[in-house]
Structures are given as structure tokens and as C-alpha cells.
Length: 375
Image: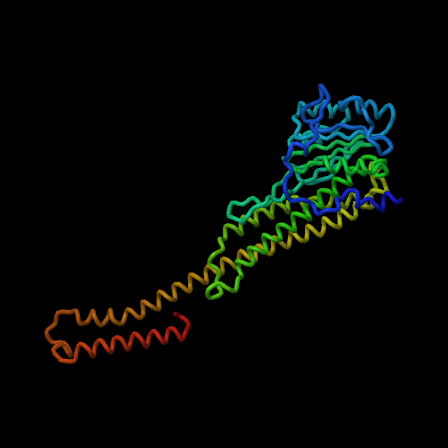
């Protein structure tokens, strides 16, 4: 059982999951046999935990023939296959037409379905998009999909999207023959754990973005305690990206619970218990993402409230200055009328007295409004 105790160390790299997309040519294994569908990234036979060496790249038909003759299981990786490219593989392995349709068309919710002698699992992969500063148009998370067909003697992965390569994961599994000897269910667990670890890394990065926006909204250095530099469109964009994240995480929890709790003949009992660990990590990520959504709602409401407060403050200042200006406007309006008989019109000190009274009234109103917080 030493292999089982080391299972987590095998499927999880020691270093933190990288948030940068690996788009280098070396990130994809493009070695294909003549006649192999162009969507096939890798095709290999594993027997007793070791990859069976062959004279050249195997086609899916050749790989399955070796498995049926000598035992083991075949692992085929495909990237965005067309219906025609996948048709031969689906026929060779007896895959259910409904599952094949979902795998080709993509854009599926995370789920687990059982079809006769196979399991069909859909994972949403999440990639954090690096950016210098969050804007109203920033893409924060990028999604992809990994569909897995798990059978007694085969494991097929279908990837959609430019990220989420499983090449490094395949190599790590090949470095532990004792684990691979457990069969396709060990590969399914490794992929599930790999995907959820990606969620954890992305959640940490999204948390940094939310903290940045929250700091700007509630910054105490803003004049009057009101933040005027945060665009609500930025908060709304981040909320949309978190919603996309939640759509990937939330539906996957039930499939992971089923894999960890319900006995399945295609899942090795020694492997099944480790799906509980994946389900537990996934539940924590789900709680974190739900918290993001609620926090962003609060931040958005606070920002809108601050904008309303700022507008009210501006209106109060405008109203206060209008009240002050009303005094000289009234006086000038009265003495601008062309009547011959008006008080102090021909008095020597009439002008300075009227101007002094006007200034005194304005200063009195200004002091009163300032004391009441209107200025």
C-alpha cells in the first residue's frame, strides 16, 4: 500500500501550479502514426504500470489489438477532434453515441454519466489570464474542457481549448508504474486532482484581483472617504469572470462525490477513497468562489452607494453656493429697477451701506452652511 500513500505526491507536482499558459510547441506531443487521425495527440499501451514500447507510433486500432491480446489498457489523448476523426475510435471502443456527441461538440457542463461498460466524465479546466491591471474589458479566467471515457481496458481524453495540456501529467504517471498498474481509474483520479489543483491556484490569483478592487473602493485616502477612481464596469467585469469560474466548479462537486462514495466496478477500490480528497478540495474551492460572488456584490453596491453619496455632496455644494449668490442677486435686482423714489437712492452713504450689508449676509450664510457640513 506504499503506492497509495504516495498517490497525492505523484499526481500533484511539488511546485505551485503555474498560472501562465504553456503554448510552446513542446507542450503538445504531436507524434502520430501514419493513418492516425490528426486529432490524436498521443496513443499508448500500458501493461503492469509501464508504457509498452513499440517500433513506431501506434494507431488506436493497433493499441487496442495489443491490449486485447496481451492485457493492460490503452490511453488515447485527443485534441478537438471532428466527428469524422472521432467516429473510428468511438466504433473501436464501443462508446455511446450520446457521449460521443457531447465530446465532439464540447461546451458541456461538468458531469459524470455511466454508459454500459464505460464512464463519461466532463471537466472544465480554468486558466488564469495574466494582466497588469484589471480593466472593464480584462479577461480574468479562460476555460477549456477535458472529457474522459473510462473503460475496463481503455482511457480516452478529449480536450477542447488551447490550455489544459495533459502531457506533463502523463509523464508523471509514467514515472510511477505501481500507480499506473491500477488501471484507467488511476488516470481518471489523476486528471480530476490535476483539474481541481488548477482551480485552487486560479482562486488564489482571483482573490488578489478582488483584494485590489476592494482596496481601491474602500481606500481611506479618498477625499471625504468617497472613492471616485473605481469604475463600476471593472467590478462588474470581474463578477462576470467569477461567474464563469463558478460554472466550472459547482456542477463538478456531485460527480466527485459519486466517484468517492458509490462503488463502481470501473473504479479500483484503492483509488476510490482518494476521490474523497478531490471532492473535499473542490468543496472548499466552491465555498471560496461563492464567497467571491457575494463579496463582489457587496463591493459593487458599496461603489454605487459611494457614487450616489458623491453626487449628493456635489449637489449640496451647488445648492449652498446658489443660496449665497442669491443675496447679491436679489439686492442687485431690486436696485436695478428704474424707479425715481427708492430708499437710499440719493443718500451719500447708500452704496457702501448696501454693499456692506450684502457682504455680511453672504458671509453669515456661508458660515452657517459650512458649520452644517454643506460646504
